[in-house]
Length: 334
Image (cartoon, rainbow, N blue to C red; front, side, top):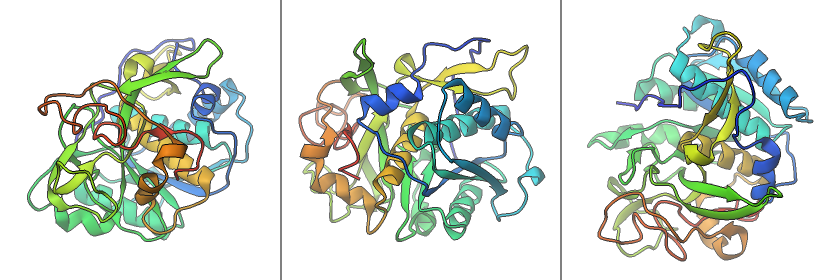
């Protein structure tokens, strides 16, 4: 069963203290742009998505040629899908993080008919068929014994697929566990007064660990897990250092600004970084293991649970489960 989005319900009529696009791009050393097609897969459809994305871009004076195309899980009209407030908030978070990091990216939103794994997986296939070179997935559920039957839907050569590692602390979720995706963990990001990155620690809610069912990919060599280890890389996810999001669907009296966190923030950020890099060939997740020392910020503190103090749930020098190989320092690791 897919975990429904659990985003902060507090709304306000004015901009809250969430990180802006300029702050995120500065913190992660991102100064380039791209027109690559990036897809977002969620369930259902936010009827205000286009106008709310435009309002977000206007608020932060985002300059770029980015566009938004919306379809259902078969590629048909998005108007055939019903709305859902929780998933609608998730949709706006995802769309706005892509736009924040990659202002000229051509965004394709594919709304699944429901929050079932089968429908979401079908939506991923449609995103790839429609030409997306990067696909972000901000959802997940507890591993189960037949999960490998879904794995092929998250394997599209030449397409970088990012997946949130989860928001329930130590433990592995799917589809993040599949060894053809980039599993994205979460951090607590602190900025200096000038907006530059001051520090990052493992966010206590991020998912990580050793998969029960997915085999270890050749590009992973950590010693304490014989199977697939989650995560690969990370980005900001702590709601206490969250991001600003504009969403009018479900709010009232103009209280449309939120501060959201979770690895639902981190997955689209990393997806947009792939677009900025222009490189989606091969198995994109493997790149972070080859160039981690020079192109990622190492996250060496914090924990997301109990695992005997090992790197599977604890931030350490080099690779660890919660933050993977680290957070973006430019696009070199992607």
